[in-house]
Amino acid sequence: MSIEIKLPEIADNVTTAVVLEVLVKKGDTVKADDVLAEMESDKASFELPSEAAGVVKEVKVSEGQQVKVGEVMFIIDTEAAGSKDEKAEEKTPEKPAEKPEEKKAEEAPKEEPKESAKDEKPQPEAKEEPEQQVSYVSAAHVPASPAVRRLARELGIDITQIKGSGPNERVVEDDVKAFTKKVVQSKASGAGAGVIQDDFQLPDFSKMGEVRREKMDTIRKITAKAMAGSWQNIPHVFQFDKADITELEKFRKDYSKLVEKKGAKLTVTAILLKLSAIALKTHPKFNASIDMKNEVIIYKEFVNIGVAVDTDRGLLVPVIRDVDKKSITDLSLELNELAEKARTKKIKPDELQGANFTISNLGGIGGTNFTPIVNRPAVAILGVSRSQIEPVFIDGEFKPRMILPLSLSYDHRLIDGADGARFLRWLVEAMQNPLLTMF
Image 1 (cartoon, helix red, strand yellow):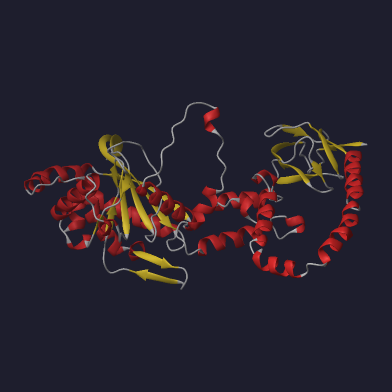
Image 2: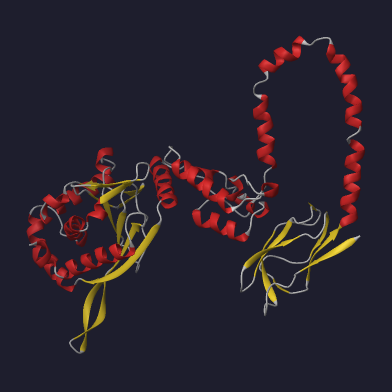
């Protein structure tokens, strides 16, 4: 006997729903109440369960398809399930019949099992592997509601790694939160990211065309783990603003020759280093770190700022120490020196550590805005994009002004939205009046 699984009535005035995921295929055996598909209407997300046990005879929908209420989505053959169960029952009596003969043969050498039991300690591991392999092949086959799946995606968690505590090992919200907490508290710095990345099965790209494989170098591996760890553990907020740097550019050009005599170049980044140091002193939360284990905020009385440098080996972040105690000329010289060391592979490990705050300037490459990732244990990073001339309405008329886009990423566990807006606004106003700020 075959039964039709139709899209049921969802809610008042809702006549259609979209198929988010189809969780079964033709030939799959299902039980009553097993989820066949995830659906979404303009009211909510929901699951479509099977009304009876059986074998999927036909799948009449696909992902992304819009389905009307009452439309047939699946056909389940209930007799096929019964015949399979009967065959299983016929086979099970045969096993007990064989066991008595096996026992007779094994009754004499009783000592062997005891000795082999000691030697066979690895057996539990062999048993555990099949249990893990029996787990669902993909996230689509994990029993979980759309809301739980969405939560896992938002937290960056691979739902196939979670053992469900609900009925029939169904993954519930508490399971996702508990798993996330374990990842966050893991002592290994890259452990959380490893769980996600290592278990993701890539397709065989060579079947699609020619490929070239290249091992990650040390810097890329360190960067990948650090960024994944920061992204997974830090609730990011991104704040954007624009600074009118017309006067700053005049200031930079006026003083550039003085700095050039010392052997360096006066850049916007060097000026930003000085202004950021003052900003960090004015807004101490941005110069702090969080100790979540002990629930303590660590405020730093020193100001070390990292500056992202693009090299042929990848992104490196040399750290300039005690920025607040140095002149713009000194900062320009040190910035130039460290950037050159980074590009020529002469930089030392300790020159890449200890940043309280980071500046990432992509203005030389281009772009209007970007959202850099906070690098733990810092709580904020400043992104600088390319400046350009824009018309600004001043004193009743439009005037050409040099405008610089800025983006601030910060850790929402410590820094609130109002704090982020104030910090970036302070920095914008400082760039628009550099002389008043620095003297």
